[in-house]
Image (spheres, helix red, strand yellow):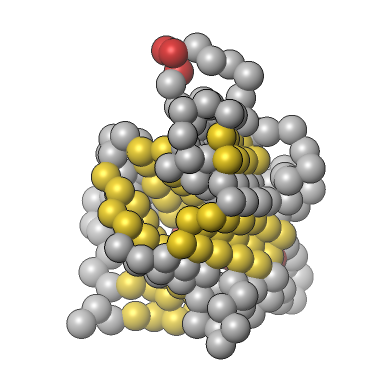
Length: 212
């Protein structure tokens, strides 16, 4: 099987060095093996030990670089982009995945959550690479745009998940709920590859073309 290195991410810093819990997660991902030239040959599992909220100013989506193979174990915790009550942002997704990403929740109560994304497309996750949702909940994310220019056809699409032609999204478990899009795909907007074999999609809405 695939080997796995497990890291715990929490609000701790080395003496003399300060970072937010949000940046701690990004730093752990960036430090994991693999890059575009030499892709990772094993998975790095990052198990959350604290709720993580993006900083109010200067925050950016958590990014999985090309060549990384990352599993985020929510472990009953919440990753909150913090934009639910704010205007949509061009980088307002919770996660942008350019590599390989698996999301799971090992907690007994399965209370792990990804929330608070409010982007012009892909409110929770933009899957430019390969993304798998095994367990955990994606909720309260939005893809909002008043620009209906067909030349930029991604705007307002994918309240939870946006999958471009290069990307893949697989859902084997977990739940996507209460997400919305202004144009299409209240839960998922796909021009790549989507495989849904389990899990639940509920309460997502769209003012345009459809929910999934």
